[in-house]
Image 1 (cartoon, rainbow, N blue to C red):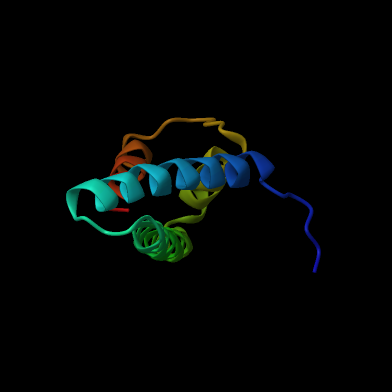
Image 2: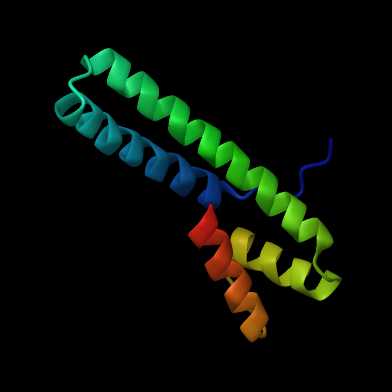
Length: 101
C-alpha cells in the first residue's frame, strides 16, 4: 500500500473533536438521563463512532459520483484546507454534507 499523502491534521482534529463531543454527551447522558458514568460514556462513544463512520462512508460515496473537478476540489479542501476556485455548488455541497452528517 502506497501512502503518499496522510492527512494528519484532519485525523488529529477529527479525533480531538470526537473526544470532546463524547465527553459532553456523556455528561448529559449521566445527569439528564440518570445513567451511570460508565454506561453514559459507552453510549456516547458508540453513537459518535457510528455516526462518524456513516459520515465518512457517505462522503466517499458522494465524492465518487461527483464530476472529476469537484472531486479534486473536495479532496484538496479536506486534505489541505485549500480551495483553488470557489464554485457555488461546491460551497453548497460542503454545507449540505456538514448539515446532514
